[in-house]
Length: 148
Image (cartoon, rainbow, N blue to C red; front, top):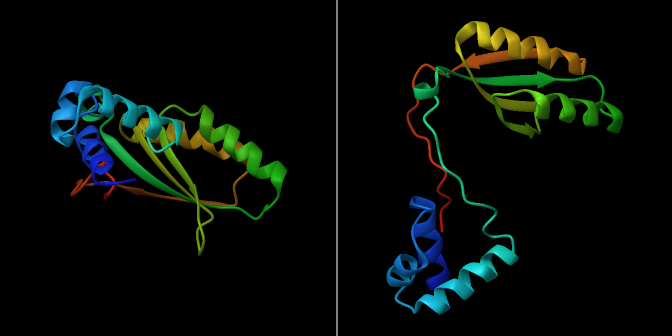
């Protein structure tokens, strides 16, 4: 990856709806060269997809929660069950297997405390050892832009 690729990627991270012509202009190359570079970055898996970011609050999803999960079952069968449960719950945005005191960390958005309770009731179907939640009071920084 060179500086031209980085310019294209930086622009796409800010606005994925930019046309190939706009990206070519940002990178200082022709439209066909920009298109070839974008295709190559997609084939290499650098570009995984293009999405539209929505405002959770505007959709009534007023509560963001981080859920720390501990398990006493460190086996493949349990891990697969946990994965299936978390994938099936609307509002679960991210799930990470962690090192340290917490086994898994989940980020979710819900419609207030009743929404969290409904999510919790679904989550415990995965046979968890310990669950604790932290609720976001104020978001200070949120980005999808990776450093290039």
